[in-house]
Image 1 (cartoon, rainbow, N blue to C red):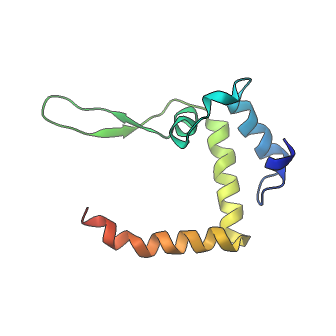
Image 2: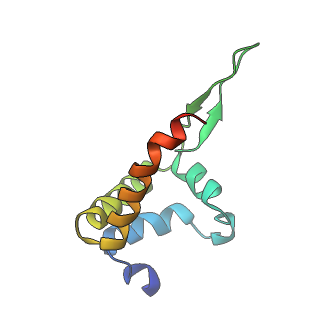
Image 3: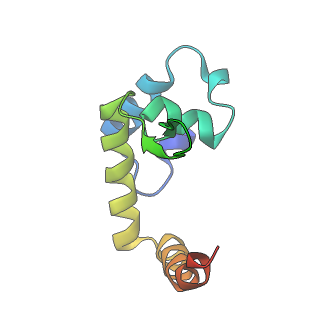
Amino acid sequence: MPRLLNRYGVGPDTAASLLTAVGDNPDRMGSEASFAAVRGVSPVEASSGKTQRRRLNRDGDRQANSALCTIVLARLRRDTPTRNYLDRRISEAPSMIGR
């Protein structure tokens, strides 16, 4: 997948981990939510009675999760658009608390 390797922060090892998580059926990755579920970071309902809560899904591909973390850290160090995105999201955080 040459397009994946052309992305900043993605090397052969991280690309292989992500592609292995997708498997032979790339159509199952139709959204960010489905990708999060495969990685095991999507929220799971853990409600009981009147108490409504969610917990982090602990299933999923830990190697793909680690690969994505490696890519994000590399991009945060050197990729200006990624750093700008993070700064913007941090500045928006106080306004999101009241929601």
